[in-house]
Amino acid sequence: MPAPEGPPPPGPGADPGGTSPGSAISRSGLGAALGHAPARRPFGRGPAVSLFTLGTMRALGSADQLEAVLAAALDAGINHIETAPAYGPAERFLGQVLGKLQRSCSARRDGLVITSKILPGPDLAQGQVQLRGSLERLGLARLDNLAVHGLNTPDHLDWALRGAGAELFAWALGEGLVGQVGFSSHGSNDLIAAALASERFGFCSLHLHLFDRQRLPLAQAALAAGLGVLAISPADKGGRLYAPPAQLLADCRPFAPLELAYRFLIDQGLSSLTLGAASVSDLDWARQLAGADGPLSRQERSSLDQLLAAGRQRLGDDFCGQCQACLPCPSAVPIPALLRLRNLAVGHGLEVFAGERYNLIGRAGHWWEQLDARACQACGACLPRCPHGLPIPELLADTHRRLAAAPQRRLWG
Image (cartoon, rainbow, N blue to C red; front, side):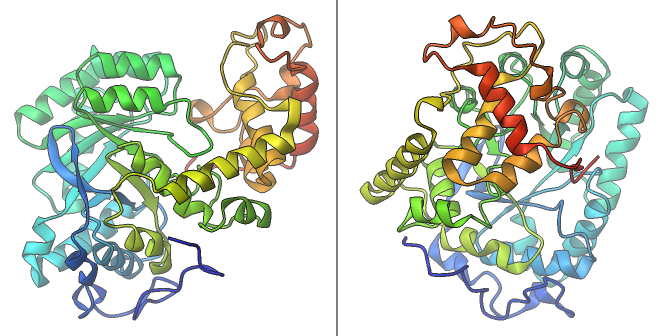
C-alpha cells in the first residue's frame, strides 16, 4: 500500500504514550482487526504464529503501558509474545497483564503463544531455578517456546548441545514445562549453521533485514527443515526504519521504507517479524499488514529495485556486495560488517543508524563486533581476493572518518 504523507495515525482510542489508565485489555475495540483473518504461519514444533511478534523489551514503564501495547498487538492480530528475564521487569509486567486478560477473556488469553529466553551458561540446577522463576513471573505452568538468549559463541553452542544446557532442555521438555526449544543468535554464519544442523532446535531468531541479507540462506534452510524463523527487530536493527531520512523516503516511494522492509521479509517466507513496541502507535504497520502474507506485488518489486539501484548509484564503484571473499582478515577486521555500515550511510542516508552501530563496536561483548576500522593494518591481503577490486583499506579508513563518534551503549548491556 502507498505510504501516507506522514507517520500512520494511531488507531481509535490509542494513547500515543502507551500508558492509558484503566483496562485497555477490555476496551470495546479490542481484536477488531481479527475479523480480517490475520495470517498465521507454522513455527517449528509449536503453535502457528502471527506475521508479527510482540517483543516486550521496550514497554517497561509500567504494567499499564505493557497492557496498552498488548491490547494494540491483539488488535493487530498478533498472537505471539516474546519476553526474557534480561528485559528488566518485562516478564513480571507481562504476567500481570496475562492474568488480567485470563480473568476478562480466557479464550483470547488461551490463544496467545508465549516465548521466553534463558542466557547460556548456567549449570542444571541454576537453569532450573531460572526457568521456574520465569514461569512464576509470567503466571504460567508451561512456556510454548524457550530460546537460548544469544547463542553467539562456540562455548555457548557446546553448552546447549553437550553441556548443562542440553541437560536443562531435556529436563524442561520431559517435565512438560516447555513446548519446544530454540535460540537467538548474533554469532557467525558458521556457528548458526552448526546449531541448525544439530537438529536440537525447533526455531531460531536471526538478524534478517532488507539491508542485511547474508543470513537469508540460513533462514531458508531452517524453514525447509521445518524450523520456525523469527527476524530480529527489522524496524530498529534493520536501520531505524520507523524514523527514515528524507533520502530513504524518496527512494522507496510510493511505499514507506518500513512497509517495504516488512513486505520483503514476509515474502521470504519467514515465520514472524519481531516488533519491540513502546507505544500503541508502534503497532500501526503490524495492524495494516496483519493479513499481507501474499507475494510481493509488481509495484513493490519495482520499488525495491528502485531503492537498491539508488543506493548503488550513490556508492558507485565503492559498493560492497557483502560476498565475504575478503575474509579472513589477518588482523581479524570484520571487513564486510564495517563496509555494510558504509553502504547504509553513503548509499541510503542512514548515517545516524550506521553511526550508532559503528560506535557500539567493542562495547557489547559477544553481541556485536569487537574491532572497528582502526584495526586495519593496510597489509593488502584482502585486495586480490575482492572480485570487484575495491580499495578496502581506504574504504575502511573512510568508514571510520564518517562514523566514529562518542561511545554509545546498547539497550541491554
